[in-house]
Image 1 (cartoon, rainbow, N blue to C red):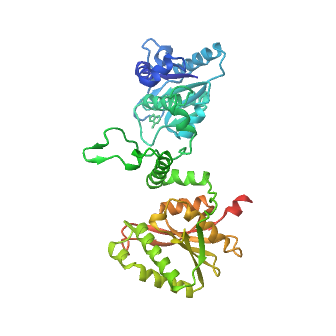
Image 2 (tube, rainbow, N blue to C red):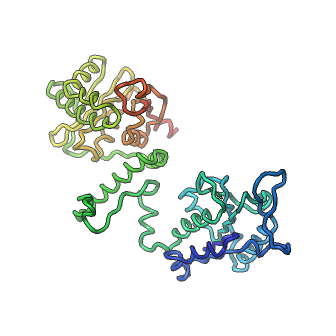
Image 3 (tube, rainbow, N blue to C red):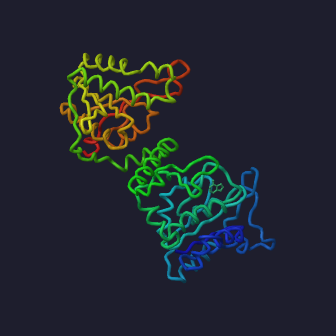
Length: 412
Ligand code: ADE
């Protein structure tokens, strides 16, 4: 790949590209980088590159002519090397927001040219004449496009084969794609009283992988719900087969109802920390949850108790009247084994008379939202709002959402 930066500060750009990993990769011939001085293409005696804007206003605007002539020279050089016309990107605060997806697309270019605007802007006509696209690196305004062009150059060049050596395949191809990175640790094992998570010292790569995946998911869901939603849409769930030791049975006996109430209380408390007041959470002990389940049963709900090797660990309910799936709770000690996903599918299949069953979920319950999205449920409406301003039980604003099973519609 050949990358060209068209700028008023070529030395600044060059010093970055010649340093560290990128500098070593360039000297190994993995790509070539060229920085061009716009001022060298001016036609006036003072080598002036900018002027006052037509229509008035503060600041100066870069002339079209030196930028255009500089770009023509870059195009000529590419042609001379037998390369296609370079893909030309103008770095502007008004461009499309830059993402890893765009980095991957640009990394496939044989020649990429980045144009740095400066001062208050750049004559629009040269953008019209040459730009294949405009990119912004974020919703803030820089004094010039140099830092932005280096951000793009760095993120594109690290994707060139060989630049990151062994890390490449792992970073780019694995299922972490689109999720935030899991936390990393190195020596010492305990630093200023903070220990490395014990699982990382076990040497059990399966366990470590599972831990890292969970961390990645939790971080993305909490910090970047937009990215997480996107990831969930692109990674539909295929619930694994039931293990031989697993059962889900209709709750008929008092003992089964007691076991379900215990699981419900434990899982509900785990879910509601930080969302509801401790006093409200304390009210939800097993007897209270049992009373709720009994009231629901009287209202037409059927509940199923899931157990692994004879040990009850999850429950789910279905309402044949309304097509609702509810009370899907996995005991905290059994979470992370895919039981929720399998039980969700099990519940849907118990409602063959409802092609589009639905469920209610709190928008702050990110793991549940992720599960439902991946299982093919989609947002339908807001059922209720819990606002700490007028609800003494709530610690944070959250909405109860209706999600409707739409996988059959999506397939159509
Ligand atoms: N030039 C000035 N601000 C910019 C931004 N946020 N992104 C790209 N180029 C810019």
